[in-house]
Length: 332
Image (cartoon, rainbow, N blue to C red; front, top):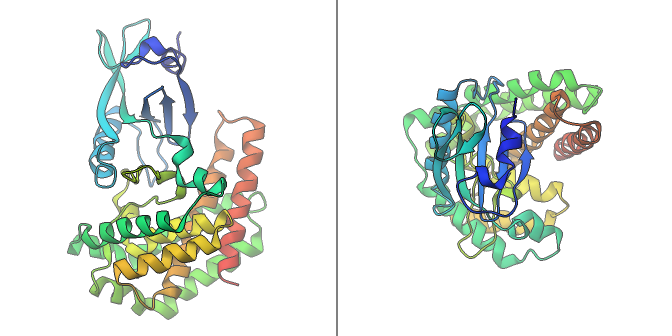
């Protein structure tokens, strides 16, 4: 039996003319990279916070992905395409046979212009950071807000996320995180809720809980002329309905993880001006800890993926440890 992956790695099975096709896998998706386009298929997984377990759900979330991402990268997301199996081969787009899967078709963005690549080459400039700050500040000010969305800013509601993190990371203690770091972070987080509850309510009152991006790190920002910011979270509203500071905290944390503390400061100072933020530093620290911990968790998940080789797993362990150490460093 042919595997779908093998078939789709053949350029003739894709809907657009291309010379080469390569594959990138994450814990939730398969991304086929062609010359001009990328095609993203959701894996049939259920992590609790994300449920792609049925074809119907994957179809729905493909459409959500396009709709939500067009807010910050309108020309990148093109269409949802069916993947068809005719009894012998898998094809994308058109053809006779049964629809077995769906893919989101996107314009392929130049890897070398992703914020992370530009940063690692030492070419990230102050004016890029100002542009990003302006774009995100305006996006956050105009983001959808409602009493339903406000609820996600309540401390009890946000605690669902942090509680889930700690329970999902527990099994990796001794592998990607030390017991004492785990306990320290858990205790610090509980204390923050106890002593800073009023922060959360103030933010709700100030209309700072919005329908945000939810996954704002450097590899999701492209420094081309129109500055697309892509790959927002489509699979779970509670990760997108959040404090705007929690959203920007991810990008700041990511810069710091990569050693760009000075850039993080420029971005934050510019953003505060555009978004009208003041006196939120301790809240920012709380959200940076949260973001670093989530990255540590997501990288730890790779240890459970049978499709990933030993080397990749070792890399995931090292990456997770660095994120957990960063989370710890924020509270020291």
